[in-house]
Structures are given as structure tokens and as C-alpha cells.
Length: 346
Image 1 (cartoon, helix red, strand yellow):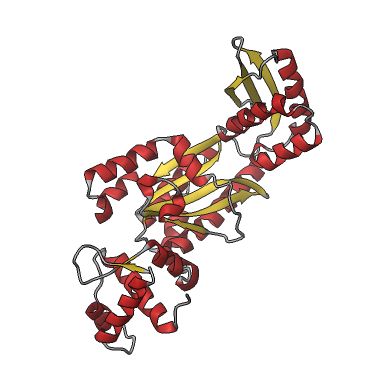
Image 2 (cartoon, rainbow, N blue to C red):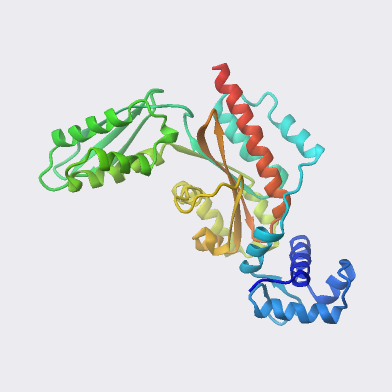
């Protein structure tokens, strides 16, 4: 059901007030603080309707309401207009990166720390360890009668390996025939551009024996995923949020943030693609129970048309969406500019 204009304005006012106060919002508060041109009684009736429609929730016995995940989703999709970055914020970002770009690792680490400093939320940056590096070769080494080691080497000297479970009756020589074909197919391709679609194309064009290659695809994909490096900032900022005063809840989230593979999966979304410069996932859309009442705002950054990774802000669902979306888009563009100049100077 679509919301009429009055319900939209009331929902927007409630969410904006709750973002600021972290307290359930009542009709009198909305009538007093927001010039909506209707009485508190009318607002109260509209709030009841919004609750029945699933956009608001009533915690315990409070007379106030808080936004539901559905309410936040409507707010982000239909009501939020990204805020322009202020001059002070621009100055902070530009100053933050001065003399801090001696190598790519520093660029990404300072991106995470700088954005966390501005947003007061957790910031995650996930990227390849060596942006622009290209596949050199793939090789299998024997481990035991059931397993082999897949070695992936890039032109920058980076080496990744993973354990490969051999199909029954297949020896390492046969696996290295697979490796040679994969090497010929992918040699010289930037690591950042290798994805499952490309491996599927290899399967369609080259592979004859599906059983022989299926596990190779999975192992190769894991090796490519491990090329990614994760940078974090602002973890301790969460302790200042009312949502994380519960020790067990905070502990669960902190434990999750220490697991790099889990965090990488948060940012590595192989689902529906979007042309939006910044995307937002709210609550259960994150698909992880420790952050079921959190939101992730993320953007993909590139340099010279090569995708280098993702930058994201993670925090309570009660986030400053308009401000953070604007900041994230600005930071993405700023980091892209730095990376392109860094690579041109190499």
C-alpha cells in the first residue's frame, strides 16, 4: 500500500527524531517540533495506521513509536535526499590524506579511519592487496592421495594457495592440465576483474568433464577471494551507541567483526546488481544475526575503470542516512582520485 503525503511526512519526522534522540517518539513531540499543520490527535491516529501497516513499532508499553525495518526501507528508498558534504567535512578529508599516501595500503587504512572519524560508526574497506595485479599462473602441487594444493601467482609476486579435494581417480598431472587451461584463459587479466561469471564462461567454452572441474572452480574462487584485504575503523565507536549498551550484544558484534571471512561476505554481494552510486542494506537484509538491527551503507570504488573494492559504513539502523550517503559518495570519489594519481605516478 502506498503512503499518502501526510503519512510520509509523519513517518519522516518520526525517523529523523528517532535518529537524533534514540528514544521512542510520541505524537506530541512530532506536533511540537515539526510544523506539519495537523494536531497531535491527528498525528496519533496516523501513527496508529503506520504501525498497523508495519512501518512503525511500539516498544514495550511506551506511548511512543520507533521505526521498523520496513519503515527505514521506505525512508531510504523514497524520502532520503543525500546531504551535501559540508566545507568542514571536505577540509577534514583533504587534510586527513595529506602526507598519508606513501603506499596503497596506507590509502585504504586511512580511508577506513578517516570515514569512521567523521561518521562515528564502523567503517569497512575491502580491496585487493595489490590493485592492478594480474594473474601470472595457476599450478597444483600434490598433498596426499585425496588432496592437492592450488597455487595462484600474480605478476606482482603475490602468492595465494588453498586446499583442493581431488575427484576420485584424478591425479595431479590431470589437475595441472586444468591449471594450464585456466592459466591460458586468465593470464594477464587483472585480479580485480576475475569473477564467477568469467569462470563460468571458461566452463562453457573449455571444460569437457564437469566433475573434474567443479571443485577447481570453487577452490579458484576462494583463492581469488583471499586476495582481498580488509581494513576497519571506528569499532570502538559502537560502545557510545545506546543500541550496544547490552554487553552480550556488543560482544557478539565485536566477535563478528574480528572474523575477516564473515565481514568479507557482508561486502561481497553476488546478488542483484545496482547502478546506484551508494547502496543501503537494512536489518535482515544484511543476512547476519549479530547485525540484524544494523544497517550497511556501501559503495564500490574504482581506479582507471578497474573495480578495486568496497567501502562501507556499518552502524545501528538508526543512522544518519542522508548525511552518511552523501559522505560515502564523496569519500569514494576522493579515494578514486587518489588511487588514479597514485597509479599514474608508479
